[in-house]
Image (cartoon, rainbow, N blue to C red; front, side):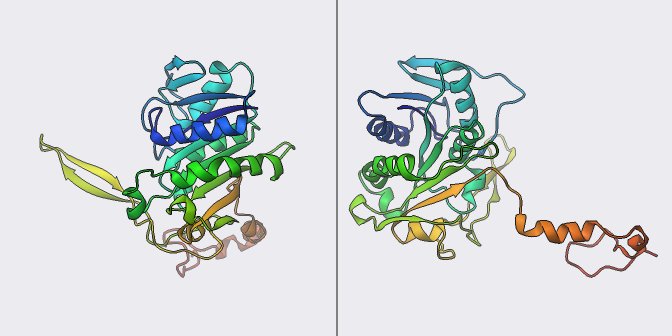
Length: 285
């Protein structure tokens, strides 16, 4: 098996070393592991690509490259330049920190897996939830290191993978913030939502006197609905979530079609647009 690995924490990130170990176990003695990862940290860039500027691709060693671009750029660089032929599998991670709940939307780790899926290549994103206790442990990535290869093999060998045209499936894996021996098992769950984990800004004054803003994340250890990636990992389970790049809210299509397809004669009753969504509105006069 030929495996491409990448991440969003950068080419020198400890999590990439863990992912290399996982990929080598999965690829086997006759397989190949190729690395194309960002030259610098690219956390929070989601599925961004460097569409308006070129990127430098540097060969650091045998089957090992650093790209001055995003994780999605790295997948494109591997397919277009670094690798002779396409990989059988793309692995992204192991991210330092969870990519559960709303974090999925910002994650460069997810962005790389999504780009691989758009290229119709099986892909898995892997992230390690960090807790205050695990942050003090000798090996932050112990749960991922011990359980990662087995889980990836299981997904590759037995999980469903799309073969038809369209938005292809990829998998999002989060390892819980516990030692490897305390992992409770693996659960297939939906993407969750944490009510208080939204991003905000925090001002700071530089020595020059200029005012800057830092982006600040919310708490990561609040609970969420059951049967979600957030709660499963907090309960000590490895969460696995099947995903696609299709963001359509399909449960709202039929109702929206009813709203949009009105008789032209009813336009006089359409509410004004200056009130916020959901607020009572007066009809146009």
